[in-house]
Image 1 (tube, one colour):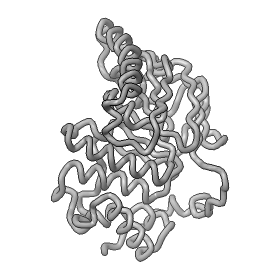
Image 2 (cartoon, rainbow, N blue to C red):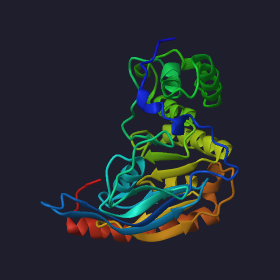
Image 3 (spheres, rainbow, N blue to C red):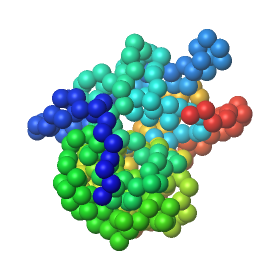
Length: 295
């Protein structure tokens, strides 16, 4: 096993403190959030007074036209950029506001569209990297936890392979396993299955639902795929074309655990039709306005 570099930024007491809460963690509150890109120049209004409450343990899926601000909102939660006004709270504590940006942290882990595995580490080494570097686990403890998680995700057979030696679907599973190893309060997924073929995507849906059903982590998931949104989410949030506002919230009352038999159910078809109606109107507006993807 390789020795990982030490990062003193992770050594704060807050990051090492054990979580003794008895109530679920991971509630997000987005209150009156506005984001203006380049206010002194282009002055692009990306988000316009967005408010949204995501309960701890909720699988919230956000859909909307390209450029509507979905990723802008996710990046603000993750701490990758600031907001112009409003506040975002995690478990009642201010993450960011118009006066301060959020700091990236292990309590909010992002699974990116493009993937971000270290090509020079094996699958197992990628998965244990975060907890070891942060000082949350020693090497042996991390290895045992990672092997158990990889086994649950059907990846033990490739644990000693490098990322370029496994399929794209397996790499996506490794990304999710690596995120879960950090035990985040919130899992942020930015169109993680966008580049996958339909069959691989269906397999990934199964693994992600298994992870969610077992962990009950709060998930903030961005997608353009309405079938994916209804199948995975407990709630689908539809955003308007730019400037991004919350247009509609659709409660997905399909029982869990779910499998692909729900795709032929009457309730699923009704929910999908409702989502299509809301998104189509915004997509038409974006097309007529000649919008190009901003975020």
